[in-house]
Image (cartoon, rainbow, N blue to C red; front, top):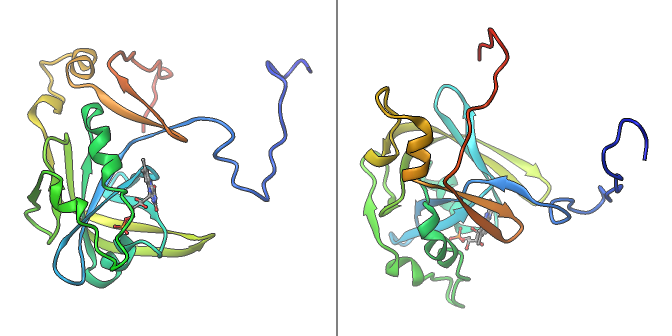
Length: 202
Ligand SMILES: Cc1cc2nc3c(=O)[nH]c(=O)nc-3n(C[C@H](O)[C@H](O)[C@H](O)COP(=O)(O)O)c2cc1C
């Protein structure tokens, strides 16, 4: 151990995916799209985040998934940010397709129609985004980055920040779901104010 290291560092093989060797924190969202046969599709994604402060949203998806093909065709999608109580629903949305390519589990999930795009959202999530496709970046290994422009957004009242409501209380009363890739999750109820430097501006 050297003076600059607080723990022994293990060199990872960058010829392989490194992300299974440790835990990192992600959100868990469900992306809704319209299938070619007109039925609803839902799929969980954790490689998902804002792509700008100007209301772009992006997520990583493989072209093998119907989600990718549906968005490439229809140029729109809907996003539900899931709550900690909804991990089973999120996981069920990843149920493998039947031999005929159908995904009947989607019909069993509680949904409602998006307003501005032709796709469904998941009931009881806390944040709902409706996006028109802006750009697809292909060729990231087996994956692609799908970027949408948010054309409608709704947040559950209990999750909405307000000047007369303490942020710490909000997170405690409306906990957040963190997906700890690979394969664990936690409910976030306790949070602290980040110590920004004096004069910090975004
Ligand atoms: C918890 C969880 C997180 C996932 N995150 C992603 C992701 O970020 N990107 C991705 O391409 N697939 C991800 N998947 C896998 C797909 O969503 C899944 O295989 C899905 O069934 C594809 O469905 P589709 O063919 O309807 O698009 C995730 C699956 C689970 C269970």
